[in-house]
Length: 420
Image (tube, rainbow, N blue to C red; front, side, top):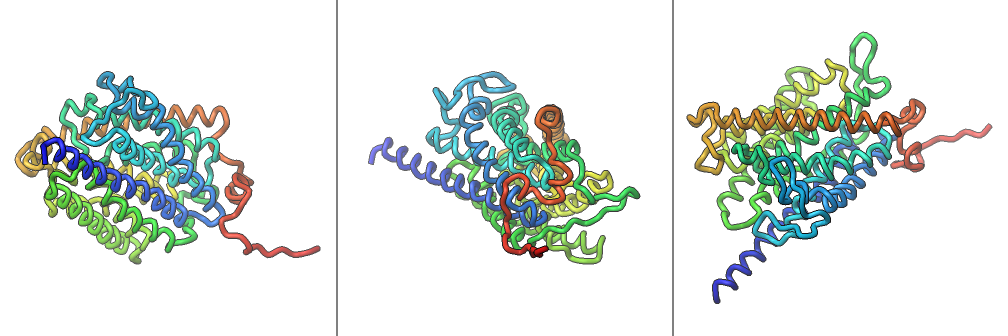
C-alpha cells in the first residue's frame, strides 16, 4: 500500500468521525426541545418545539449563505469575507469541506436554540424567526471567527476547545438580553418582590431531554478533535465531559437541598447541564480531577444564578442564562486555572504555575464576547420590538401561544365543553 492510499484511508476515517459527531450534536436539538418543553406550561409546548425545529432550519440556511464565510473565510482579524454560499470556501480541518461545514452548522444551531428557553411563553413566533436567522448568519459566526477562525482572540492565545464561549456564552448572553427586554411572564413576580413558581408541565420530558443532551455532548466535545489520530485525547475529553456532568448534577442537588429543603430534580438536571457547559472549553486541556472540580463549581453557580435572576425579577423559564451564560463564562475562565501546556493550551494555568497570563487572556475574551453579543443582540431585539413587536398580546399569553400562534394544541381532547 502506497502512502497516498494510507492518507486516503486516514481522511475517510476522520471524515466518518466528524460526521458521526455532527449527527450526535444535531440530536441535541431534540434534547433542547424536550428540556424546554418540559420546563414550561402545556399551553406553550407546541410553540417552543416549533421554535426549536425552525431554529435548526434557520441556522442551516444562515450558516450556509453567510455564516461559514464570516467564520472561516479569508478576511481580517474581525471577520472572514470570502466563501459566501460556500463558493470558493475551504475546509479549516483535514476533512472535506462539506463534513467540516456540517459539524460547524450543528454547533451554530445549538447556540441559536439556547435563547428559545430564556424567552419562552411570551415571544412572538415571527420575531423569533428573525432573531434566529440573524444570530446564525452574523453574530455567532463573528465570535467564531475571533476564536476558531484565526481572528484576533486566537492570535492572543485564547483557548476554547469546544465552545463554552463560542456556543454557550453567545447563546446565554443573547438569552439574557432578550429576556430583560421582553420582561417577565404575567404572574411571575408580585409587587412586593416575591416570586410565584410557574411549574413546568412535564418533568419526565425534561429528564429525557437532559439525557439526550448529555449523550449528544459526547459528539460535541470529543468530536471537536476533528480526527481520530490521538485516541488518548479523545478518551480524556470523553471522561472529562462525563465527570463534569456528574459532579454538576450532584452538587446542584445538594446545594438546592440545603437551601430549600428538597432535592429538586429540575435543579439537579440543570446542574448536570451546567457541568457540561463549563467543561466544554477546557475538556482537552485538563486532568479528570479538574473536570470534577469545574463541574462541581458549575453546579453551585447554576443554583445561585437562578436565585440571582429572581432577585432582579428577570424571568428565565428554563435557566438558559445560569446554565449557558454563567457557566460558559466559568468554563472559559477555568482554562486559565486548570489548563496544562502539556495538554495543548498555550500557557499553564494559575494552579500549574503559569501565573495570571492565560487567565488574563481568557478574561479578555469573555469581556469582548459578552460586550459584543450584549450590544448587538440588544440592538437586534430593540429593532424587532420597534417594528413587528417582540411580545404577544396579554390575551394570547394567558390563553397560550399554541393556539394563538399556531392554531393547534400539543395535547388535545382535554377541554370540557358545556352546552347552553
